[in-house]
Image (tube, rainbow, N blue to C red; front, side, top):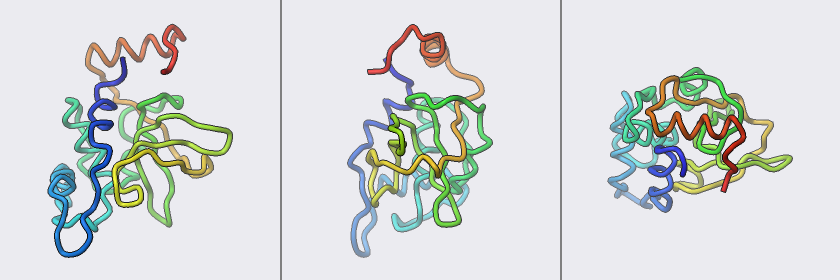
Length: 155
C-alpha cells in the first residue's frame, strides 16, 4: 500500500522531453494543470508534474508552475515516502515526491529531472519543505495514520 498520488507518479516514470522542435504531449498535458499552460517541454515542468499528479489523485494542487509554491501548500510533515519535497535550485526551486534518504541525499521522484520523470538524488542541504495534503481521502489518511503510528514499515 502507498499514497494514491505516489502510485500515479510512479506510473509516469520514463516520460521525457523530446529533443528538437517536437514536444512530448504528456509533458504539455502536465503544463495544462498550471496557470502558465506552457506549450513546450523545454519550459521547466517539475511543478507542472506535481500539479498533474495531485489533481489526478483528487487533491487541489497549487496550479502554479513555480516549484516553491508547494512550500506552503497543505501541511508541514516529517520526511515520509510520498510526501512532497521542495528544494532550492539555482535561485528558484524544485519539487517532487520524497522516496527515501541517506545521510547526505534525498531521493525524489519528480519531473524535469535530467529532462525526464525519474528518481534522482539531491543534497539534503537543499530541502526547504516537506508537505502533505491538509485533507486526505480515507485510504490515504488511513495509510498515513499507520505510518505515523509506526505500525507500517516502508517497503
